[in-house]
Amino acid sequence: MAGLIGVGLYFLPTLIAVARQTHNTVGIFMLNLFLGWTGIGWIIALIIALCSSPWPRHCYYYYPAGYYPPNQIPPPPPRW
Image (cartoon, rainbow, N blue to C red):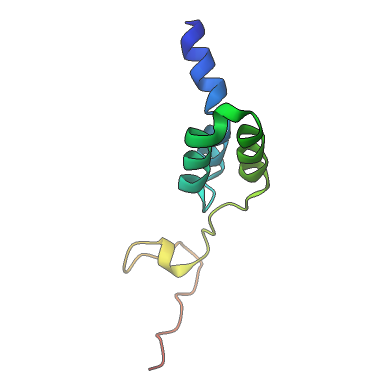
């Protein structure tokens, strides 16, 4: 049980990034995995996870093709 809590605390920055759905979750995970043991790497990963902006849900490329949320105008087609 203590080991599970320890792993959870070690990967706390990654868990925060996943919960906030940040755009750089993979980078935070890699930083946490490889440099989290130093302490400074863990603090940097935590700061990045807390300060990163969530993934923009209003972008048209976030939604599957042909799906747009209710009351939202689809984006104009690209001009080539």
